Length: 193
Image (cartoon, rainbow, N blue to C red):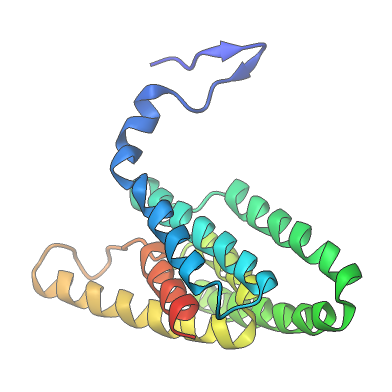
């Protein structure tokens, strides 16, 4: 089907493209409700970062399940949203923001660095989008959060892969999308920490 164009730009969202996503439309609403319930325990600044990370993690999960890739455009939007949240915090509460900035940079370096190492060693067994996504998760969650997310996500992915191999649903060389397991790790980190 040819893409429709308006004023020379392609129309990305069509009825046909939105229809498969409709069953998942209620999940962000449930996540937002859970975050509102959690709002009494967490300050507004980390809460906003958690909300954004849950939203982006959800989108990455859907895209990875459908297309088996996490697009660079999503990574750029995640990075832009983090910058937009951090910038006013530098002026409003400089000490907290600088501390969070250091923690975020360390989380991005460790999360993205470890996944980059696995990407290089595994000969692209891990996708480049997963590496960039984990670096962005590190920005949002810092070192402690990204460590928990990596641990939970990779263990869940490994166990699922092992079960699928034993059931002969996939072969040893086949890949499975990692974003859904990282999203499960994000949920664990946000709601249990």
